[in-house]
Length: 55
Image (cartoon, rainbow, N blue to C red; front, side, top):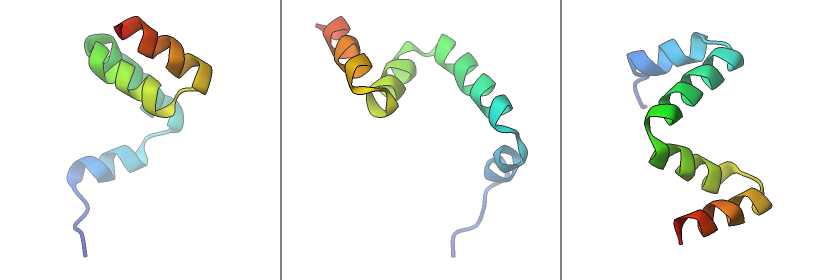
């Protein structure tokens, strides 16, 4: 079995709103992470715009 890390336990206690706030703050500091999340989880039209941004 996989041991649950301290970070996993902490994140599991947070509300969805708090998790969204944390991710948004981190993305402000890391544009590559932001683009990666947009490409992976964004809507198809949004994804295509992001890919064009890199060209």
